[in-house]
Length: 254
Image (cartoon, rainbow, N blue to C red; front, side, top):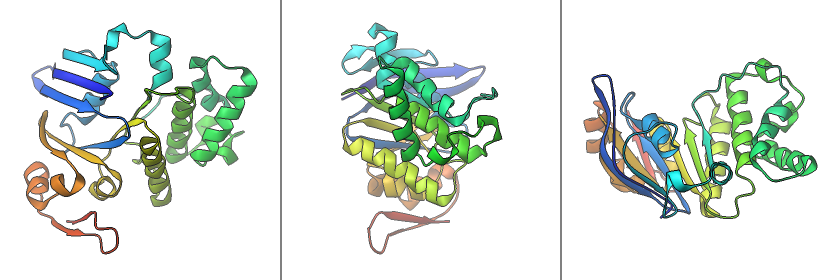
């Protein structure tokens, strides 16, 4: 077990975003969090990353989260937010190399790590472009490369949290991004992703957590969670679910 959160509750104004949630996450697993808009998915990531405080207890690899030294936490936990407000005229390479600020590495080593991660996210050809000139999808991939650079020296205890990492991407880059996340999980990382596309979740998730109104509606494998009854109950829309003809994961048709 890499992350454990107990009794997590979060209220903003009169709205309960999360209601006494208990969850554990494991290494070597890609967990995908699903649910309707406003149901607490991004809020849960903000609690797990300690961006927001809440009632409850959070542990990371058996140690209370607040007991971790900030520099070690930065090297072990990478967070890709939904959007970033960077407006300075940095080049793409400079943005990605910002991830190296958390590393104990030479400038040359950071440059090599950044180049590798830009290759992984298919933005190396953009390395000299000014960041503000990029499309939304290109910016998203640049920030993924930055986050991967930040956690690149963690030999173990690596956590990657992705908040809607495919939202601005074309179909090819959606699959490349989730294949990269899946590979990192297979290599031992704990990977947690919030996405909206049920079919992408079914194809790539090892585990699916379905939230609804701040509560866990279902938690398990894609086959056990992504059935017609669960989906209609949570999303309020009827669907048909059938196995993929070759790979047998669930395929959802509205």
